[in-house]
Length: 88
Image (cartoon, rainbow, N blue to C red):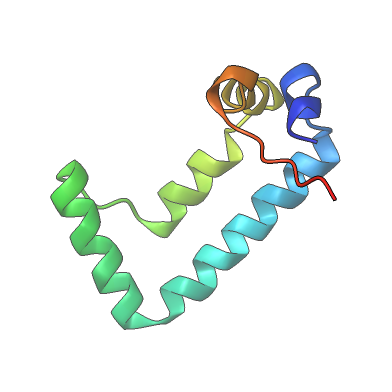
């Protein structure tokens, strides 16, 4: 399945479902004040800024099928990962 996304774009419906799932998970995470404060602290340390949930959601919505395929091609190159086969 990893190779599939290297050679084919994710279907728009699947991409939209993944985006909505991620946005929903972030919304649940931000309901917990402690998680929100920890996230803000990490953001300040790493990026010297704090993105709002709205900004983050907008960035997620901008992700395209082409970008997913490009990342898959970079991350899942055959020569970059190993396989272990168990033979009985």
